[in-house]
Image (cartoon, rainbow, N blue to C red):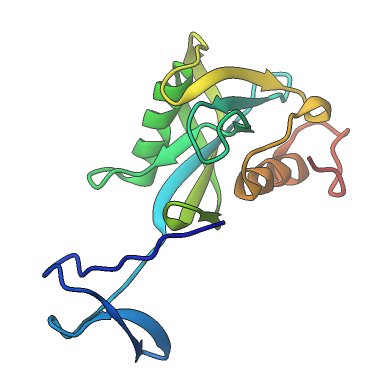
Length: 179
């Protein structure tokens, strides 16, 4: 995976150098006398489960991983809290409106465009609306545990495994099971 590094200071526009700063080599602007802190980009994903304990997946229409299946979700906007972003993305990508049941966890996923994405995962079991592939989606559908397609991101696979090992109601799922 090729990750582009920032080459210019976002404040003054001068070329960045490298400097040991706070026990880490960081991009550093000699003009501003400031390091460039690069943080993960915040995003959300949703494990949406129907009454048959099938998982809702979206087929991506954009890179990275265009054409692969993933959980609905996306980036958190500056003026949103994570729950609002998750529900907005659910509506945009699937046509569904949902109610968050619980926070499943937080993890990090590498990304070729942003280096690292901090992912907040939620569980939804209550939703309404007409299922339709929307924004950033080629297709959308519910899948049984046994017939899950290849999932685009390890972080999404992790949240699916968490659901089936810790939250699924059915006795057919065990801790050793996983996509």
